[in-house]
Image 1 (spheres, rainbow, N blue to C red):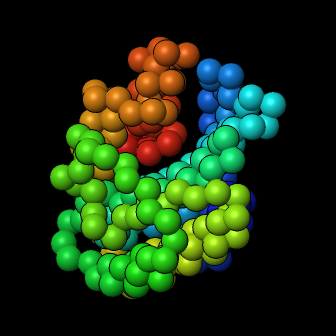
Image 2: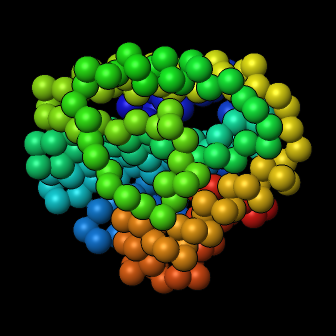
Length: 216
């Protein structure tokens, strides 16, 4: 699924793959991670993490778009297959410098209204998470519908990005840094796992320079 999503991004914004150095392959808490990073011409940084472990019983995908050339929100996609469950999460964070019309994303969310909801609970970042974010949780029987939802939502984001206003990169990185530094300070599922495995310093470097590219 991740490769299909990366290919879709490349249709709208030509991709150049960048190296991830020592972070390209990681083994963390029994999971094997493959990490990739791209420059998407016309929008900004794209990164992906694909992980599997526990004899294939758990699979996790992450896709992050950090816009620095278009005034769009920070985009985060997570997908987890574990214990017969399928969880789909899209979170958009407010890194906007001005107003951007996100109605296409709301329409994509509305289209998925019939899919089973997933309550993520309260988190420190809720104040900057946009209402067009969505989260779903179902069984294997929902996977095809979740795949369709994922592509529709991504394509709505890409279509919106095409029409969004161009912007300066540094103010966008500063806005994205609020979320990234919050993750490093307050923690989160992936953040905590990486901190335990590779330490706080390397986790910070991975997040700042590769996954979100808030530092260049």
